Length: 346
Image (tube, rainbow, N blue to C red):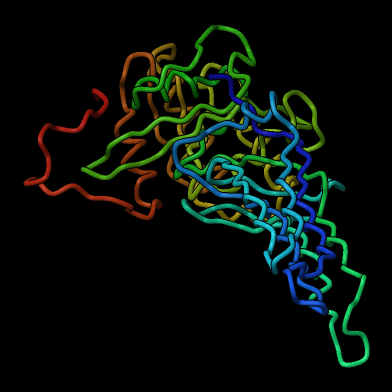
């Protein structure tokens, strides 16, 4: 299924049904009086977050969502039927943005969360409601109240525990394919990954969702390259696994370029925990590797891990390191495990 993280849709709730103008017509009842019923309420539109969706691709083929109007009132004091509500199902992590592209209406972050986005119009009152001591035979009924209509943006932000960040061709997709059962496209050229990929890894019986974000380059916060369209997907991650290509000449500059883009995009991204790892170490001599680890460690003030994702060396150490920053959502007891969870070969 193709990944789509942004869509624009039109929403319209149902109009209320009109009230009825009616009078009793029974035989031998000369002045029966009014008996027009009220109109039914129009259908409302709800947004619901569901777990089994991970893309907005369905909204490419359907952009208009209109709830039915309420039924008009009828004689014999019969109220019109209410219009049926409609529910628009979106993936967990979807933001509902106003047409201006900036105003946040609601953030759908919990499975099962439901939000009333457009309320149906109320039904009009029938002439029975206007009977009084002065006017006992009113010939007036209210029309139904109009529903609400609007254009809104749906923007999906991937919800993952760990975000893989780094420059293009640093080996993020290879790492994801090794530690999870995800199968992203892998090739030896930049921007192979054109949309986020998700995978689930197990570390010491704990589940960890990992997101492979398309590579970032200088100026990404302003839209350069794949730009800030995919920077939003790292906002919800609990921690970063920053993968640096060990084969580049200046690993410190490579690292600092990405950190600068994160800082410029949003201030709070700088406070997220980060594990730094040099990838492709199988292409370096021990002396070259030690030199680059030392330089990067001194520049960042953090421990720098080393791995070769393609050779499956050191990958589990990186997972253990980043797992410390993840809220443990689920732990399987030995009694519950019917089989050993799949884990990468280190």
